[in-house]
Length: 131
Image 1 (tube, helix red, strand yellow):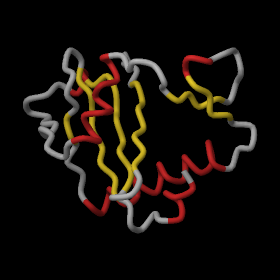
Image 2 (spheres, helix red, strand yellow):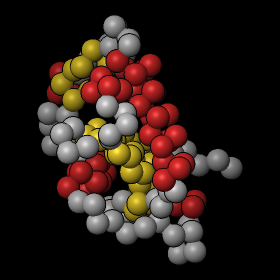
Image 3 (tube, one colour):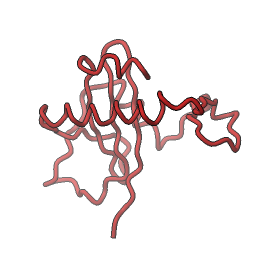
Image 4 (cartoon, one colour):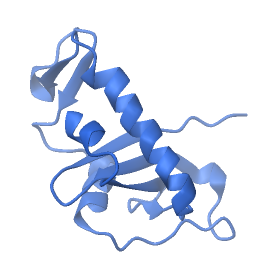
């Protein structure tokens, strides 16, 4: 993860949303000026929440237990719900999210892809509906 902090100027960032009842994520069209600050925000968050914490462990999901401060590494079959993570790393050709056609209330998750040709990380955040 430190790679992303050390190479923040050369890595890219792409933001996607996953919509309710859809399996393929849609790309959000963000102005490049704004994308730079979004990238820095997520890289800084990785640094403060993961890299700098000494008590964080990486554990295989199949060996999970009751520990706190754990990052789980998938070593079992990935559920269909998370197949969208593979979609964003395997293709750059995604339909754009369009507010005229897509309902903002149907967004169930946000996916952030950070990286370059050498390394990538994909972050997944479930979105809660606000009433």
